[in-house]
Length: 323
Image (spheres, one colour):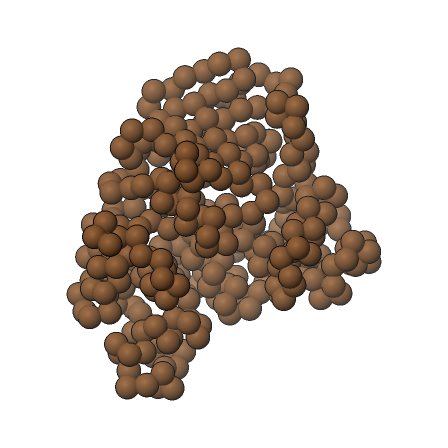
């Protein structure tokens, strides 16, 4: 992302990045809050159109603030921990790229519209959902952690387990007197043991997964280069993620689409099959894994946007300018 109007103070560096039109940052933040793509570190204010998040940039703690400016502009501000000098411009660039991928800022929305429309189902999605630009998970790694930790448990326990992982294995940083516990990296979890995790209220299965798939990622850096995976074929990416212990079919598709994020993945599950069935099949029973993917291939290279719009339509989230 190109950054303009760079400003520095003794603690921060900031600049302006511009999304492709049309774009509504407040709408994207509202989607972030309501879609489950946010986590314990996101501090979202959709009304004021800003997001604050402590995170690692270039493997060092920083606090990033995204705030809406005029039109499609977003100000990106990066702050160092207390006691440190202001970040350099390369750190600001890292923050801008993170914002870009989280909110699809550089996507050509007219190309998305052209790819999705063209038949009754696609035209319906465009009419009801365009130009919505959904938000993604903070990263593929964090999407994997959320998927494994949160599976089949109630939200209160999931939050406690998230906090425990961060406090025991994550990096700590203090910003303006407030301590933040950052999400542990795959490397950080290499020192976790199953018995130790079970003592922290993780189930035997979750403890197994959390000590296994981080090791696989660290042992195979070329196979699990999440930045490079964004440009690979969607089906290949999904297959590789599914090879991770504890990652099933739905999780691998969800992490690929919303964690990497990848532009061309359409999640195959009951909700999406039910949504497309009346438009492409005589009944839902005719849809198999093979012909489902053949059907949604018509939305390439923006299958992920068609899938987002399918979920938004199913759950009654209509954000088009005409609605």
